[in-house]
Image (cartoon, rainbow, N blue to C red; front, side, top):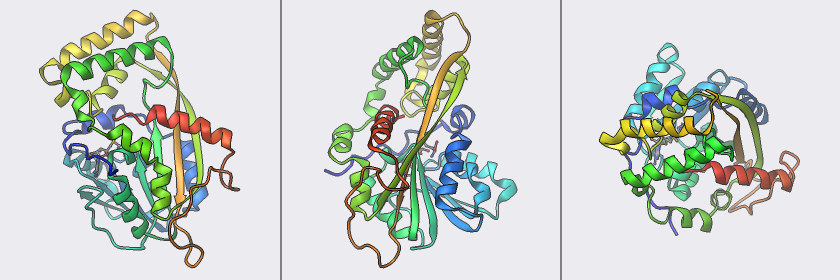
Length: 307
Ligand SMILES: C[S@@+](CC[C@H](N)C(=O)[O-])C[C@H]1O[C@@H](n2cnc3c(N)ncnc32)[C@H](O)[C@@H]1O
């Protein structure tokens, strides 16, 4: 079963919201990733579905050359603007991950932040394997959404979001067959079939105190509750959201332990491995034990919403 395609314009008009309101990946997670792959400032990074550059700007000092691609022109415009003072390092490309043209065997790391689930995963995994040098790495980063958790304000938030997604017709922004395809073919199976070894899954949790403005701004950065998705009802949605949040607690700040994670896969070094690799459950020396893997899997399934 092939992954269904999402509409290409789902993030139209979200770039400014995205850049202002998405929390950054925690430095601990980024440092962990950089240490594991041994990035020393000389290599080449490709970030796919880059948004406004959440991943590449976090690691900019660790790579001599950074390519960043996204199909949404607004995202690329904001990201390129932020790189204006470092233009020699960055190359921005507007285009889909599936059709991207990049040279074979030249990248040390390919990153995909909060986006692998939106792609034709088998096509992109095969492309990435080709673009990486032998021994190169693919990192899937995940996490950072305010609604992940069971606090009363988060339960309220989930209810409001579902109500408005349904009311505005945004449910249709998630293509039919999406859940079935991901269940039938988990990410690790897709990566293994493309010839990757899954070598580690790690995470970092940060404490976050959201204001209502920040939660409202975050939701506008999503594909399902963007200004375009809400249309002329955007102001009504904002008012409803703020009333609902106020109704569940008097404090101004909405507290959350926010978990981000990274799944690290590697292309085998030349001569060591041919063909598909059977996925392992993170019991390698670099990996984690099964318990942690299960915990992360739960976090991931909660966090991989189609936002
Ligand atoms: C949730 S955002 C992630 C942005 C950023 N990578 C991050 O870590 O926050 C998803 C991004 O994927 C992009 N995207 C979705 N499908 C894509 C595709 N097929 N090819 C390229 N970009 C895509 C969207 O335009 C959007 O910028």
